[in-house]
Image (tube, rainbow, N blue to C red; front, side):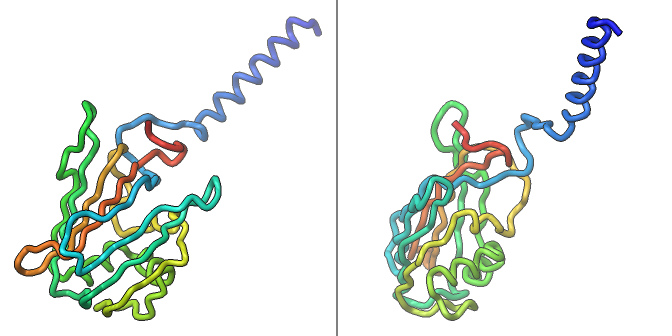
Length: 197
């Protein structure tokens, strides 16, 4: 058998293996699909501060970022309030474009619990809240730290458009006054990506 024949067989074998392996390595560059959440910033916004949210992201290690801080209820958080959540998307020409996702609902406590799903119990454990049902009583709750990866199991669509987003969540009373407000900036990235530029 000549060297030329051996080289031809090796080339065919390598080509066959790379083609048969390509299905498992297929990483489509579609504008939407399954995603992973990359949390970037969290901060309070303007409100009457009856619900004070003082939380931040703490980089514990290179691969672990935690949610830490505290929140204070000066009145019980129950179903008499309205939850007003508006997600803005980062526009391709720059700047935030509101109303990518709008969720306004009465019965704020019960509906927030439904949306958070398993994250509700994870947060309550982290913030040492003994009562995991509504209403959340008056008090100050301090977090021991929760890994942000544990905060991705939400009851929201599992496929969406990739990009950078800013969620503004407000707790309002019947007079439409904002009693508490938090902003979470995050990106939805493809499962194999690390971060969107």
